[in-house]
Amino acid sequence: MESTFNIKETLRNFKRRLPMILIMTLLFIVLSGVVSYTLMKPIYQASTQILINQNGSTAEFNTQNIDANIQLISTYNVIIKSPAILSGVIEELKLNETVKTLNEQITVSSTEDSQVVTIDVEDPSMERAVLIANTTASVFKEEIQNLMKVDNVNILAAAEMPVTPEPIKPDPLLNMAIGAVVGFMLGAGLSILLDQLNTTIRTEEDIEEIPGLQVLGIVSPVKDDKKAKKPSVYIQKREMMENVEKDKIQSVSTTKIGGTY
Image (cartoon, rainbow, N blue to C red; front, side, top):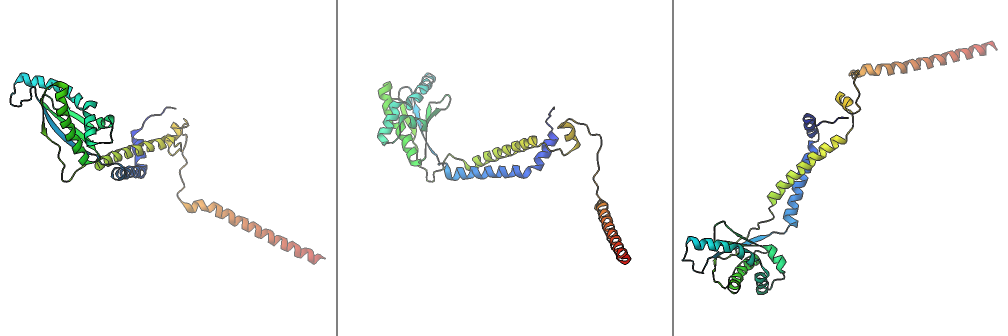
């Protein structure tokens, strides 16, 4: 049996199962909202910017020095997240974190052709994120003098505690939008699956497609209920007449027999 994807039939199936698709879409929107607002912990971010130069003097800038400084940035990005720096941060702040977990909270990035490095820290506490970001920058500034024997790091902008901290994640609206798309896709997929599993024959085309038979004739439905009821009513009346006639015949025969004797 050859099966083809009929877009028209699929759209008709979607229309027939539209309530189910809408219910699944709304269900996933509500579920995403509940999870975002109640189960997921808010995460805050604090950022500190540091400037890296060749000889520690920000006044002496030329093309060669800038190129040399940019080459150092990739090396410094690795050093910032190294155990040598993060161990000092954990010890100074007395954190209950390991080097690995603290490493996962810190992101180091730099703009192309720029000597500015940004240290981003994510944490469930905004205050702690600010402390970790500033402490990481200060520990790195001190330790780089021992590691590289240079003093070429300056803190450009320290992280500050905002008046009204706003978490960067979760984003409830984004999660609810994603939930709506997922719910709609699952509803549409379930609609197609139910339609494929349903082998009920409803149209002439179904007869030719599912069992592979040809339609030789069609029996039209009888719309007039009175005509459909007439034969049964007529049969009932006929049976009643026959019973009545039998009773009459039996009573008459009994009278004749009694009169003879």
